[in-house]
Amino acid sequence: MSVTQLSVFVQNKRGRITELVSLLAANDINIFAFSVADVSDYGIVRVLAEHAGRAHTVLTEAGFTTKADPVVSVPLVDKVGSLAKVLELVTECGATIDYLYLSARMSVVLRVDDVDAVERRLVAAGFAPLNEQEVD
Image (cartoon, rainbow, N blue to C red; front, side):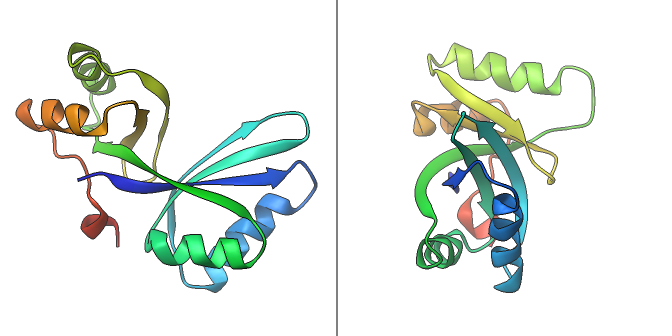
């Protein structure tokens, strides 16, 4: 059920993120979640995109160091406590959250140490994590 997140290592230099997103756009690949973690000399750009396999190939062929990982993407209802409920369920199943961010599709993206356990717990509680077919 998980979706593929691409982690792209990018030099901390003007225009590099623009180059990355423009490259995906030029290849008709839509980005629907995006996060940047900054370290002094480089950044890690985390991307959820339609056609993740093709996006990975396009980025790698353009010289970007790119890693693919499974993440959980859970649609949220726009009401108080929605995110808290998801995080409580993750905690209940004993998983550790490495990081999280929000997507343009009203979902929270979770990098966790046990994707399968988190997805099972969320589904049992009535949530519907996204899968690759839904994002392509």
